[in-house]
Amino acid sequence: MADWSAEQYLKFEDERTRPSRDLLVQIPVADARRVVDIGCGPGNSTELLVKRWPQAAVTGIDTSADMLRQARERLPAQKFIEANVAHWMPPENTDVLFANAIFQWVPGHLRQLQRLTGALPRGGVLAVQMPDNLDEPVHVLMRDVAQSGPWREQLAEKARVRDALPAPGGYYDALGPLCTRLDIWHTIYNHVLDDAAAVVEWVKGTGLRPFLDPLEAPERKQYITEYSARIAAAYPPQADGKVLLRFPRIFIVAVK
Image (cartoon, rainbow, N blue to C red):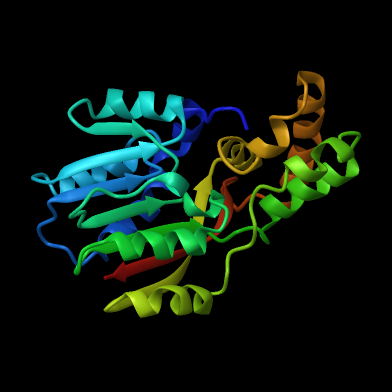
């Protein structure tokens, strides 16, 4: 895929940061010395970690040059490095590995979570949040449009970059033997957005990217037009004209 756009992602910064806040308060570490924000994006979640543990060495890692640029501008005193978590090992004595909305993109992420948990010292924490929304209309309609348009063959393989997440029991069985404590929970957010067009703008920064990136400009415009019409039907306005974007997410806090 093309590089991520920090500008597009941050159009909904408050809504995207809320799961990070909710995950952070469940981490049972009072005085962290070394903290890593995996998939730090534009630094919005990293900023929360710095505020929670101001004395810690906080590092952000990401694969996107544009996201890292924005993160460095936002938090110039922090360290940000370009790295793919699938080939990355945490520094020794890392107390917290924090990962908001990244591992759903990582192939074989259960094995990666096991590997990272195993690398932590005793008492270290792996804290993870992942969208669990592939069955929501916003994603179902992406696939429907991809399969029904002139781009059907072109998108047949490229658009399939995320697999459905395992059930909570899959994470429990994979991580439980490595942990002294393991918390797993689901939350369903209902993000209040201005209208159905805002739903499309939201996913342009994340899930819609694999569908749009392979297309030329005219086809991209056609795809967006068709997708937008279906989204408008699937997300009708509330009494005040706003729409609710239903968004299930899974959370994991694993204590080594």
